[in-house]
Length: 234
Image (cartoon, rainbow, N blue to C red; front, side):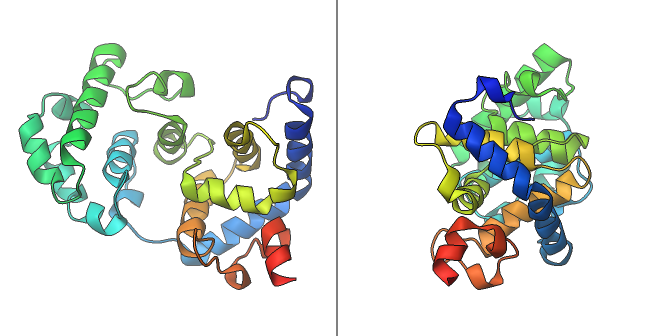
């Protein structure tokens, strides 16, 4: 949810006002595109908070292709938080070599698991504030656990989503505090119903269509709503 208007700087208030105007059409466009175009990965099936958390750490700083090499084997060997909290870091590192960044990634996973066991009794919390206290959990992973793991409406702003929102609302971005404004914007746009599909749709739209290089504006379902696409297409 967005903050009350009086607590916002004028530029951010103007951005959110414009977002309200486009919100329903924006949501519908993303959801319609997602129905036909979502990518099929094992971490998107049979989701639980634990599986979502593990997948997001494995996917960090690597590709989906690389993550596919280890995700299912990882779950067989460490099927829950308790098992992961007792994992041998060296054994984790050996498996995670296939995705790279393995020493740091292994330590992140164990530190997360131990914190959850020690502070939350082995249950991943379903409140954003509690999630953000877990080591190495930021707003994106917290949003993923809430939306994909618990079915709680929450925004998931990674680099792909940040890029989409920055391009779509380019004319209304504040001069300062862009990242925080984008987070507020994303929270306003995420729907109550269908939020998981919507979030995954935005992630895939950024990866496949609204790419960092060579954005495919002619293929994008948001082009009619996008400040950048309008300037590119004319």
